[in-house]
Image 1: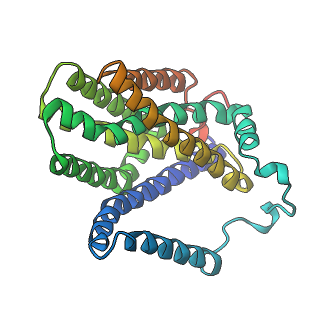
Image 2: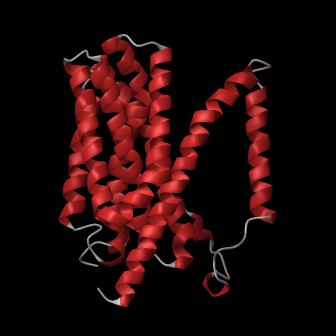
Length: 291
């Protein structure tokens, strides 16, 4: 491996670790946010809403006045065209690029079973093993802690040792086993321990996989395209976040409790075949090997 390839690989690993840290911080927010909201709601149901608005305003002020600009002056766009703000054009341009097409497709496919899991786990727990809010809440808290540990610390240790490809494969494996376990619980095995282990495996695999894909996608574009890419990824995630819960609920109610998880497992296997076929993470800098 030449010096340029080593720099690319090191840069990609730094990105992966950075995205892992961001994921861990998101996990912290997801853990403490509902608790704070619950305490504030005792004062009034309006208080959490106004508190959220205040925090958002403070974040905006910090971004304007204290956040340093990371983009070099020569990489900044001097003009902004109106058509560049169209979300469908952003997605069309992103999927048209060979170095992003497979990664974005993989990201979209693994996001669907994740939102199946997030939005349907409480119903599955209640219907299959008789769990109440306390058991589901404890499980989600455990998943959040595990996500913080994996993305905030373990990922930084794993990437230098097993590489981006190893993280991707490990994440896919955890998701697949977890999704299969939840499908079994929904179909025939009413075992609370199996549901808990499956859910935690799925959550841990999702955290590692998402951080890896975010880092690989970021490394696949130039420094002046990071905001453009982040917007495209966010658009895909928001679209799936709107539609996946509706699909999960409809499948769960009309075709059987195991159907959303069986479909999710099929999507995860498809992603595994797709990414491994093109050698994602095997090339210089973690890019597909044919790039």
